[in-house]
Length: 200
Figure 1 (cartoon, rainbow, N blue to C red):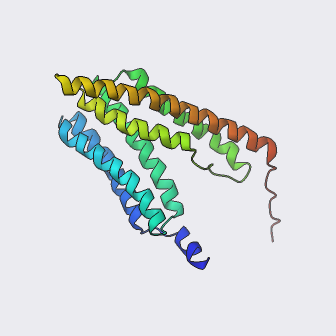
Figure 2: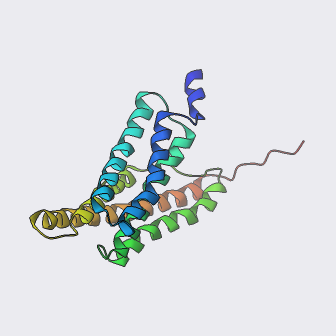
Figure 3: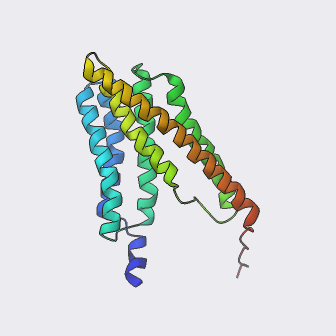
């Protein structure tokens, strides 16, 4: 039990290092897509990001290196990658702007719920499997759409599969967000406010 407690607040772990590397890749991706127009390198970076996303969770469990920081960094990295990709692809006219706006709007909704959670002593709720499934679909969709920005059979297939993943991902992303909002509503109705400890 003592060992588990000791790993909770560790910062320098292998999974956390992978999450930090993923965060550093966000501005690099935008530069590759918008400035250098190096789509091959940008696609490779997205693939590496997807692999490290799976790897940091696997290693956290395998090496018993779960941490509070890791639970924060992983979803932040996911959301920033999704935001960077949709902005980059929208500015390149690969996806329409309504797609680029739908995803951040859901995150704005969830951020607006945080103050309500804090009134009950929570800063966040556990990530639901629907959210993980949505992220999985989106992290496959956008590399395919980037690959589909061209001519030929491969580009056409990438477009078809990319948009399939994108529509599923957007639907699941919003479904997970609405479920999260419902959970917050239930929590507010069923959980009393924490009592303040008397001073002194």
